[in-house]
Length: 118
Image (tube, rainbow, N blue to C red):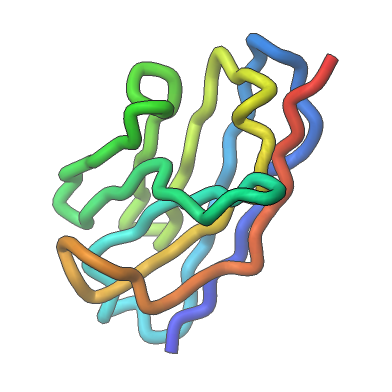
C-alpha cells in the first residue's frame, strides 16, 4: 500500500500562483508514476498532469504552459506549481500514484482545495 498526503492548497487571486505538494509513503518502491487530478463542483475528475520517475511529463491542455509538475525522487514527493491561475482552476486537487507508466493510478490522496477568487 501507498499513502499520499497533499498540502499547499488554499485561496489564490486570479493571475496568482500556488504550489501543491504530495508526499508518498509506504510501498514507494512500487511507484513508477505520479500525477495530479482535479474535480470541480458538478464536474468529473480530470487529469491535470502526470510524471514518471524518469521525468517524462504529460499535461492536460488546460494546464499546458501554466502548470509545472515535478518529482523529487529522494523525498518521494511530487509537486504541482501553478501560475496564471484562473477562476476555472478552482477545484479539489488530488494526488495519485501507481506502478504503470501509462493508464490508471492505484493510489489516491484525500485532496486539497484550491480556490481562485478575488
